[in-house]
Structure formats: structure tokens, C-alpha cells
Image 1 (cartoon, rainbow over the protein chains, first blue to last red):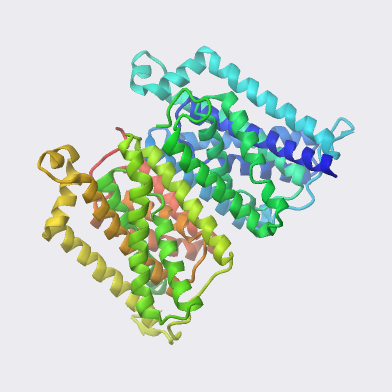
Image 2: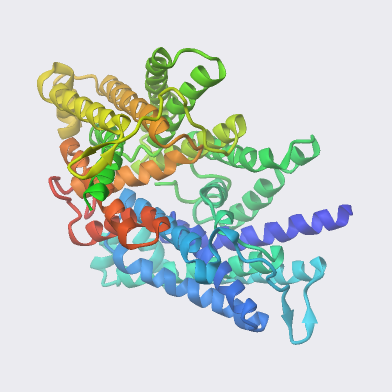
Length: 290
Length: 290
């Protein structure tokens, strides 16, 4: 029993790791103040769920989730290429609300508020991942792949361009770097991994609805990135583990589950405020939130 | 069709109240006060607490609730924004702090009052009267009248009084205003007080017209930001005009699309304006290409 509970927590940690580290790529390394990340997570979850329910094998649905989210990232990068600061933040947040409205209202496809039940557990070449321990392996693999990929990208010359764009876009441009393209690529890659995280979530819980992807989830992943420290992957890992485990004791003091959800978000929001006020670089950030 | 336009004006009047305060803070303090929506919700729920749960009579409670909203705004500025500004935090950090406060207040309201929609039964539902082919209830007429009176008052306040001039001076050039002996921090406090009180009025009106939901704040902030961008950021009359347009566009959009997409219309407008006319209808271009 207790083992099953820990496996569940570890799976959640792996999914949030994928989500938070992919946000680091666009927000931490490229300096895009992206409030639309949960939209990519939702797009991935829906794409994967719909594909799997239509009979696609898991790997195809998983790939479709990443691809659809990446395409959405590319589409979002088109109108927002020229935007900075507040405008970018609000425009990406608007994107999140549009995606949410589509998920809620496109009844023929997403079943609207009813959500999509009965999403099959993953099965790859005859091996079933219905067991949580096996699923944890899959989630951990995805999280590790995301971590390594983002770390690798950050160290390549392309990663340097991204960080140059973050620190001084004008200077990067004057050295002949294509900042617009770099930002679009970063957003695409970031969205791709968020989509994969969404796919994992959908196949793990086996049910998704538009309310799963709410503004509270957004504050959760934002808190993870800021508390971990912008552009610090190790810090993010630490922050994800701490933030997933921190509200868990609430369950044991007999709090009803309808309160646990909002209480969790209140805790994250309060910690985020505290970090912004006291330690704006987070655990291991090299860059101050700006 | 006239009915649709009438509904648009009613929705727009409420957005305009929120947007005018939002725009006032944006122009004087130069950041997106995301928690402005939380002020609206806090004021409205305080009124619910006073009149429905404590049984106080409605109109005196409404006055207290407006004062409470102003106090909430002043407190947000004093305890969160001001320390951050003193540390020279960028506008994005302030935006994020506001976002965290919004989620914090939403979660607190959810825990305290539950997720269901709350209504005041202070005003008898009266039969609508027909004006030029549209059915409008007396409440809706008074909403439009209240909004118009308040906005006109705000306009005169900004143009005629000394404090209004001080605010415009800070909005125009903070350094110069400071050099002329204006206490900038004090001006910010006044701006927060005025805008939050107006937000409180908006909260009361929304409570009467639509009922209260813990999540009402986020939606209002996005709508009023859209109105502000459309009208031209930094211009209070522009914010009012833009908000009316948002209200109209939503209701006209709901005429052609499934009603659930109503919320998405504003964001499409936001994208369109950010893309093609980022300085809005009346505004001065600031921030987009900064």
C-alpha cells in the first residue's frame, strides 16, 4: 500500500520534471516569459488520448502528442515573435485560455466538460505498462531524456545563442544571430516536451478533462521553475521534488480532498511570492528573474 | 441584434470599470497589476460575507465592501509590490507576484466559500423593460449608469484635481516628477486606492448581475487587459473604449459561435491588436518594441 503511494508520487515527480524542465528551455534559457506552457501540456494530453482512443498504438500516440504540441508552439511563436515582457506574458496566457476554451467547447472531439475517460494504459511492442512500477520506468525515462536534451541544447552553440538572446537580444542580432528563429525553435522544443508530459499524464490517470489543465497547474509549474532558479536544471529537479512532496502531509491530517487542491495551490503561490521577495534567484539560478 | 449590442454594452461597462483601474495602475506604476482581478473578487466576496452570512443590510455592506477592496489594493501594493520595486525588480517579476497573489486569493476564496456560484438576493428580479427593441432589466440600466458616472468622475478627477495631475505627472515621467518634489510611492498608493475602490464597485455589480465565483478574477484581468491594449495602453479613456469593444465583440461572437467560445473571442482580439496595431486605438506605443 505504502509502496504504491510512493510509486504514485514518483510518477508525479517525473511528469512534473518533464514539464518544468521543458519550461526552463523557453523561460530560463531563452528568456521567453511563457505563461502558455500548460496549454502545450493540455494539447499533448488531448492529442495522445484521442489518438489512443482511436486505436493508435501508444508510441504513435506519444509521438503525436509531442508533434502536435510542437506545432502549436510554432504557431504561437508566429504572432508573439515581436512581443516582449508584459505583452508576451499576457499573450501566451491568452493562448492558454483559448486552448482551454476549445477543449471545453469542441464537443464533437474533446467531449467538452465531460472529458475523455478510458484512455488505455501504455503498451509498447506487447509489453504492458499498466502496472505503476513499469509506468514509473517509462516516466523516469522521459524525464531523463528531457533533462539530458535540455542540458545538451544549453551547451551547444545554439544554446549559447538562446542565452545571448535572453541577456541582450539587440547585441545577439547585431552579431548576425537570427533571434526570431532561435526563439521560435526554443518554444517548439519546449512545447514538444510539455506535450510528452501531457501524454504521460493522460495515459497514467486514464482520464482527462479541460479542468485538469487549470491556472493552478500553471502556478505550480511556474513556481517550480522560479524556485529552482531560472536556467538551473539541478535546482529545478530539487524544486520539483520538494514542491510535489510538500503538500502531501495535508492528506494525512484528514483534510477533505476538495480542500487539498486549493490548499496546494495556495501553498505554491505563497512560496512563489516569498521566493520572489527574498531569494529571486531560487535554489540554483544563475539568472535573476527579470 | 440590438439585444446583442445591449448585452455587449452591459458586459463592456463592467470590463471598463475593471480596465480603468488596471490602466491607472499600469500608467503610473508601469506594470501589469495581475492581482487586480483578485481585488474585484475579494470585494465581492466580502460583501457576500457581510450581507448573506452575517445578515447585515445590503447597501451599507456594499459601501464597506468597496472600502475593503480599496484596503486590499493598498495592502497588495504596500506588502508585495513596494518591497519588490525597492529591490528594482523588473515589471515581469511584479507581474508574476501579482499572478501568485491572484491564485492565492482564488484558492483562499475556494476554501472559505466553496466552488459553487453565489448570488445576492438583495434586489428583486424585475421584469425587463423594452428599450429600442432590447429587453433590459432596471439592474442593468443602473449598472451602465453607475459605470458611466464613475468613469466620468475618474476622468474629471484625473484632469481637474491636483492629485490627478500628480498621477499623470508620474505616469508621464517618473524621474522628472520626483525631481519636482512629488512623492512617487505615495502617488502609487493613491493610484492603488482609487483603482481598487473602482474594482470593488465592479465586484458588487458583477455579484448582482452574474453571481460570484472564486475564479472570476483571472478572467476579468485578461478581458480588461485586452480592453486596455485595444484602447491603447496607458490611456484611461482608451481602456474604457477598448473594454466596450471587447464586451460587444464577445456578445456578437456568441451570436455566431457556440456560446462557450465567448471567452475566446477576447483573446483572438488581443492577438489581432498585438499583431497589427500594438499601440491600440488611442494609445501611445510603449513596451512592445522597447
